[in-house]
Image (cartoon, rainbow, N blue to C red; front, side):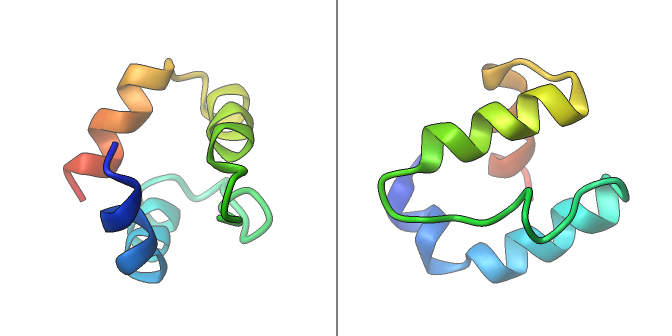
Length: 61
């Protein structure tokens, strides 16, 4: 996952993820510099997806 691209339009991507997965909250999608892996870990648990699946979902937004 491209970190620069993720930071650049994260608010837009966050909205799309919340539309696709209604159970996600703003806290689940809190992107903090240096804590990307922690956020992805939370999403893996909440959505039951692998890290690769999450990367693919976000890349397709």
